[in-house]
Length: 619
Ligand SMILES: [Zn+2]
Ligand SMILES: [Zn+2]
Image 1 (cartoon, rainbow, N blue to C red):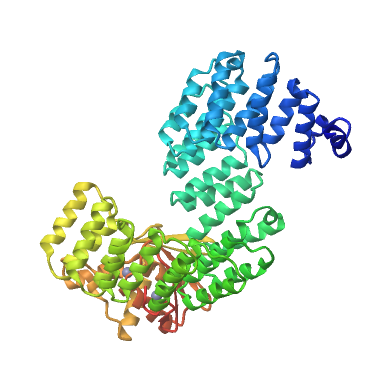
Image 2: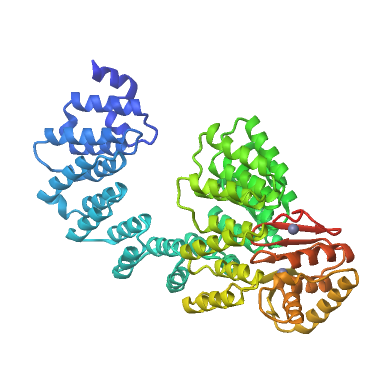
């Protein structure tokens, strides 16, 4: 009865169907019944095919059952090795740990233990089950190991985040191939070991597109976007065709650097090479790049142009981009549009939205969405969300309320939260709270120079110069170095960098300094007074003034005024937060010189035009 029914739907030789890709699950089940009925269950090859197909299906545990049944029916064990790897794979996929261990016990007692296909499958199964130690013990006991065994163990350690163990395996490997080296570059990059990644990269005789992409991502992840971009250019010049992940990585490097011309070039390249068809992350990478390069209109254009295949990542990038530009109302509108389209927001959507409210000074709206997120959308806030709310309340001067949020949240406050309290205390002149917050922040991040700087600023503000020098000597003792302010400006396709106190590229020191002097003179005649409160050093007033004038963004601006034609906006990228004095300075220059100036600092964009800034002095 069953067999005749099977014959009707799956043909005369049903096991042959198992080799075909399009066999449906119900057909597979019928074949299984047929195999039992016709006693083919003792036929090793038929069983192997069935176990293999089931192990790749949506019901991998069925493969384990079929294998167990076959094992009890087999007269001898010839041919069983063909089923074992698939059965182990199925155990891994269906979390069948006990069954996997039984197959291991069975393999140990038979000839199977000498079969590298079987032992490699055991290693992979334990890794899939997250049991790295068991995988290692199988690996150590294996009679023979091939490249696949080594690579499996390597990727297992990398997946588990055990970079030291991965490194040990990588160094001990008798031979390495592209797979091993690419995995290691990726792993080193993700663990902040960019130099080691570079070493592996340099040693490789043959590289493929994955190698290049992994190395570019490693640079981007480790805050070396310029190197990432250079490597991408080198890759192109060698004729290696970038794939979608490579393009996404380089777009992220460009976003960090703020070089929109490079970004536009890549945008064109993506379309003329039809890279966009294959990968859903490209849209959000482009939106992010344009937003971070100061061209929010272009970001919006990309966002609108991909409306037919927009995913949540695209929405999130657009909302975060608007937040970065302080366009809080627009971010809220976009969120409402999302609600109208009945799209489900995720935690990243809310992070963007809260940060928009934060940057735009919308305290009530921020609190409203923090609640919406938890009550209506049932999303559990992460520490970053709490950080946003604490910052929002702190900036608005609601320090008590901010402290209450910290007290009630289910996490220990991290360094970012203490830093938010710290800068809010500075802004609202609460020196006692500021000091506490600074000390807590230093405790959590003893190597983060900005916490020490802020603490010494607190003491300086009230003239406690003894404490200022104590903080400085603490920094020296711990080997903490202050991150020097650095600004870059792109003129005629070339990046010019300025470091606080001196121009980094030799050659235009003098020109920049005399232009800067001229600008300061003109501004002073219009009423500009340097804000000496920004200089937290116990030095003479006129010395304070010359320190202030040499802030890197002022030098970059002077250079821009001299070399960017009138009518073209001046784009400056700064590595740390812009200070109050520089902010006022930019506002005045935009008015007196009738120039549009766009400054991106660590936190956000400032668009200066006709004497005003888009941040409305809220940053
Ligand atoms: Zn400054
Ligand atoms: Zn501003």
